[in-house]
Length: 186
Length: 145
Image 1: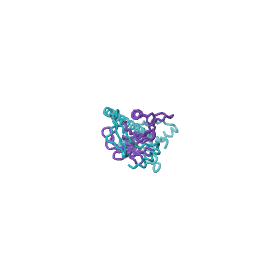
Image 2 (image 1 turned 135 degrees about the horizontal axis):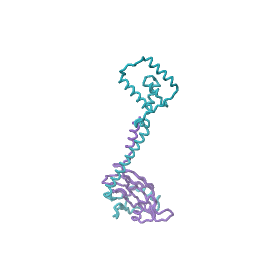
Image 3 (image 1 turned 90 degrees about the horizontal axis):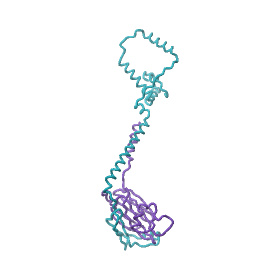
Image 4 (image 1 turned 90 degrees about the vertical axis):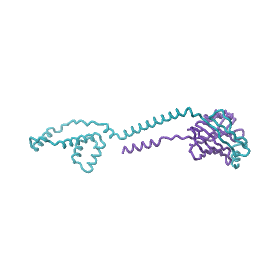
């Protein structure tokens, strides 16, 4: 049901479609905003007619009326009739473009998260900046190497702490140093 | 179905927001006065190069190894810097922006330095270690947020 066939909508409302055709028509109406709108329009008209039964009787018999209708149809033959498509609402568009709507929502949510995060970061920087002086201080230091001393040095900069370990065994190269410390059990 | 998909994506977004955790970078440095063709300070040491020159006075500083680790309270991090050097760091407490850390610097089976320091973001602890030939081995710990 790729085309918007209003007679299938009528058939569905009349209960003429059964089985797979009925299921396919229902599925199409759920997915197609044009046919969905037509379905709702026709259903509304039927409900309106059902709730307002005709009070006046026909001036002619039903057989005569339908024979007139039949003649009229035959007279018109293949004459095409322009039917305006129903106007789509926002809800119809959203029903048709579910993934586009979901993507737009995700994009908005991402933007919101980004805005909140950047505001939080700005606020944190603004509050912390005056108090957040970089500080590095040595509270305690020691070495386990015999005949060695580890000393914290007085620092000119508050953001740098220095520990000087003196008296460590001297080695000529890295291999010798690794061998020495690998066997030096502290 | 699209609603369920949307909720799943939004939930993933909420849980994907990164958490803010401090981390510490340990760098093993060789200070030397031997001239060669390479720049006097490795690019990876540019941020602390002025401090190194001011404190130790060598002309060149070479990065021998580096490791970075997020600070997880109550757990000890082991940073292997190569050449047999290993640093153990255990966070003790956090006061405002300063982290109190227990630091142990090992070489092989030898505990070179055991210290407790308070260090805040972008601050550094420099430890002058063993001498190898005419060069010095230096450990630099830098706090990063």
